[in-house]
Length: 214
Ligand code: SAH
Image: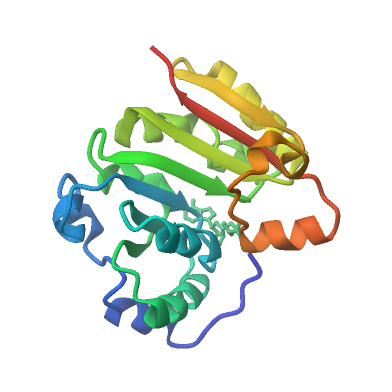
């Protein structure tokens, strides 16, 4: 994500009714945040929020939490949410490494990862959101039958992710494609900001869906 500092974005986030400030205090209590028992789907690294906002509008019976570490990006999503006022969508500004402090065991029904940072250097591999280190964190919060759905145009990151799923003791690959937009999985696909840009450039989009095995 290109980073331009947006002055005052921290204050806007602190004051918005759509952001959760004391996120670790909501652990195990997300149903009270939303005021219902609907399933919870999260997107980690949601950027400006086009994807999660489209899903939230399409699926009023699913609760969405968008997670993003940079204020300057998150404020863009907040601006849109101020207009749309979707009751089933909240945002957290946080580093995803701490995700298991925010959601309880089995509290999350689905995790979306879209165009996650590639961290190309080997020594940063653990920071990739599909590394075994992150899969272990997802295990702590995701329902047993819950899926992680990952899209990227970065073939190296995708190949790495396939290897990590293989390597991780508790994960299975349900399906994958190296060219989403010419595959059966494109039906119902919701575009992200990055995806729109990369598809226009002619890049193939990779997608995988994984879950915890027995
Ligand atoms: N999902 C959006 C943005 C992709 S760019 C889209 O597809 O258009 C990746 C985003 O993930 C950036 O906004 C970046 O700040 C965020 N991000 C990367 N690593 C993160 C982490 N560890 N915790 C929280 N957000 C992260």
